[in-house]
Image (tube, rainbow, N blue to C red; front, side, top):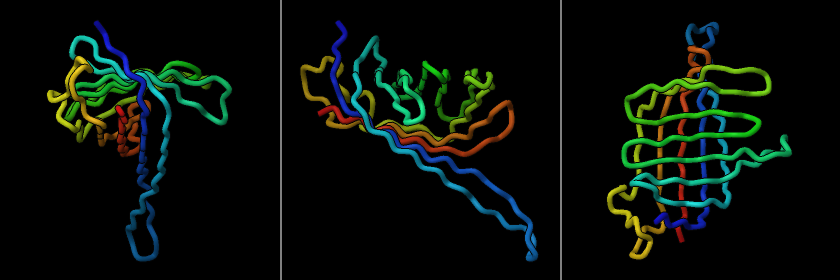
Length: 165
């Protein structure tokens, strides 16, 4: 039997873009940083030993929300978006994945190489039945490089906090 629980999800994403410039002193490197934070209601459940979180991304620019499925376990995290934008990103430490990123402006190849991935508390300690004690929060964290059409685009960091209280 699948037990579902309404929760709050908080997502913080950082994107670091390198810009290399040559000035009068020679080589100089600067890094631009974009941060995004989103908090919204979600549904959390466990199916066959894998955890799922379902939520909607709301954009000020778009009238229709994007439906997001976050799937994770102790070794990987998968983020699938469906709506005006469609994408699938997989994060597994020291592995690369490619998928299509479908937008109203065309389809691009989106690649990720995950440098770090972690879950805390440790995935195995979560009581899957929801009848016993479960942690109050689950934290997911990944650091990864992103490519668009096989060209380096940015280094990224995502932190997901699931509030199960």
